[in-house]
Length: 132
Length: 240
Image (cartoon, rainbow over all chains, first blue to last red):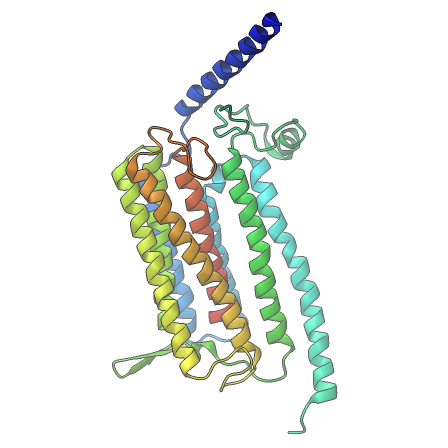
């Protein structure tokens, strides 16, 4: 009886010991460490890109030029934020793919809704359009 | 109390290049994310789910705008401000964008100083980030007030398609809520940093787990995500 208790006690202390060793070893391993300059450069670029996308509206570009410029600046800004500020560029691919791939699949949903809204628009024009 | 969940993954095994490495990590038993703690992995997974929520909002806005036969109000004019005698298009939204990007920059540096265990700079930068966030929410409140005074309602507005109001209030309202929660989150963590909780590994009041400076990075992930969502809202709702 006492023997078993000692055994369990021993196991427990062994467990905590191993855990503490792991924990102390882990504290030496630093997290994401990058030079401040990198963040400042990215910050600057985000300002430049935001100004560019604002100027698209300010100069009143229209049509495909406007839309492609908006999308270009949007994708560049999003990429910089995710890659550098959120450190995705330095994460293992197993995490990067698990997080970045699913949102890309939203594009399928976008395609479905484009067809759907075209159809709705057509029906509205055919059935409800006021004669003007 | 024994900690059952790994809070700090420590040294990670060598990474095999490319898709083979992804397959190796995912099929390795126990943990797919080798060098990422549970806290960071859970924040990323939460952000993924939040991405889907905002995707759905933007998609419903796209569907409404594409399928309506009534002209969509021109956001460039709706969100213009008269400063002095000049009417500048979209200026308030541009300033809000710059405020949010500035807050992202200070947050990124707070994370950096956190890992260097520089308490004062980390806490100060987090509070600056929170201040930028609060400024953003304030400007959004101003924008909402202005639009409501001009007669924008979820069911209609003076300029065109009725869905403009509902899309606007839903998308920016949800985003503003996220910013507000982020500001509260930032202030709580900044206080803990300032008090030195993460130097003495003081246990948190909610999870009873030891605190680490990694929480600054996790808070940062949330904050950058809020900025990221704004990038998409700015492009699709305000500029398109």
